[in-house]
Amino acid sequence: MAKKETPAPGPDDLVRAGPGGYRSGDDRFEVQKSDQRWFIVDTQQANEFGQQLIHGPFATLDDVRGAIPASRDIKPLLRTPRRTAAAKPAAGPTRKPAAPTSWIDRLPAKEADEVRDLIHALEGAGVTDADTLVRRDRDSPFALAAAALIEQRLKALLRDGSEVERQRLRRLIKRVVEILTDDGVATARPLPRWELVETLRDSARPPRPVRPRP
Image 1: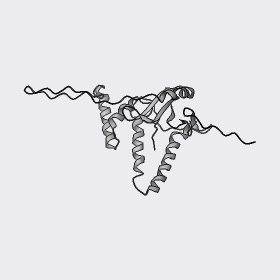
Image 2 (image 1 turned 90 degrees about the vertical axis):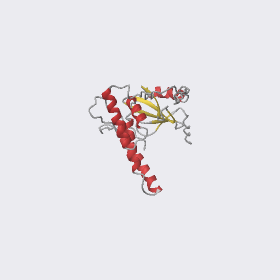
Image 3 (image 1 turned 90 degrees about the horizontal axis):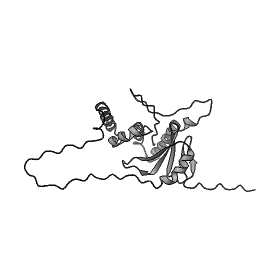
């Protein structure tokens, strides 16, 4: 008797994508786990800062399944330029306008200095848009700054060689990242488990998973 063909997954179905990860049936959403919670990552839309659009957290995969359809209709806020008043004729000497207050200026002095040092260091390491990255990193369940540094160094491995060699290296790097970030959460007893996490100096903040994109 011929075997029944397995029906293709629907766009909102969850499909296993390696150890510890899932994707939607149409490949639009990735589902990732962090600290016993689940997050939906939209691979087609970015947030208002141009970074990954993340929904969650969700307690269970059933909650994720229920949230995927509505996640398709969520539109990120657009970044709009600040309106400025119409210029008026000068009437004698004018004062230079004060510089606008940034999000860093609103932090306590010690914390603001640490944030500026981190932004400066990331820019020195070649990471683009470090200001926005650090702002998002502070409230994210994932270590975004650490992931950006890893991605920057992995890209450096692909600068030389032929296109064939770079393609081979891309596949190798992708597999290494999967081993570090996904395979360790799926080992069975009595094997140990592992996870790629951020290590902070002089901080009480709990470790966060690092999810670089190869």
